[in-house]
Image (cartoon, rainbow, N blue to C red):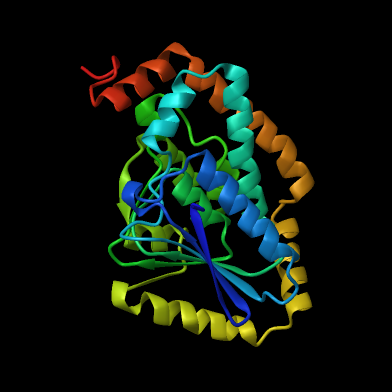
Length: 261
């Protein structure tokens, strides 16, 4: 069964990450299915907008534990290939020709924050929590870093990358990661209001407006491919490093890494 459910409602496609039993955490299957779904809607001229959300109580909890266990034992070359697949997903979402809305129904950690940052518009439930906690594993949010920095700014990113702290939806709103926070039972109405606004714009103009905003901000798919390759090499090197192995092993064993007293 696909890890992503595609729901078509008129000219809007809702992509639902469908692994609620693990809080929609990433693994090879989810990355591949979500990338393929995005490529498909990008090629469909009848689609006007895309809504990305998660099934169950969470948006996405980042990396799946079983997937991380495999990456902890993989070679550096295998880790690079794995990271490049995640980078391709983020790049596809960032530069999708359709307007995209993140419907953040719950927790978004690690790569889940990356997905939020890659969407044009983000609306979060007031109870949603966020974190970029990779340093607690001896790692860094390498692949998602360009998109997160673009969303929250360099100053905020420096703190969040270093502390790995959990922050709430109000903080995410204040730093620009999300555009709006609403009560959980008002989330769908808030998304529908934005979809109504988007329906009033011309599809060609919206595509060009998105491209204009990204290029003015210094982002283009061609340059991001080079950045992605550099960042994939970085995270692969850290995963196989002594500190990365220590952090991943401690996380998987639910113990403390050696740098903690």
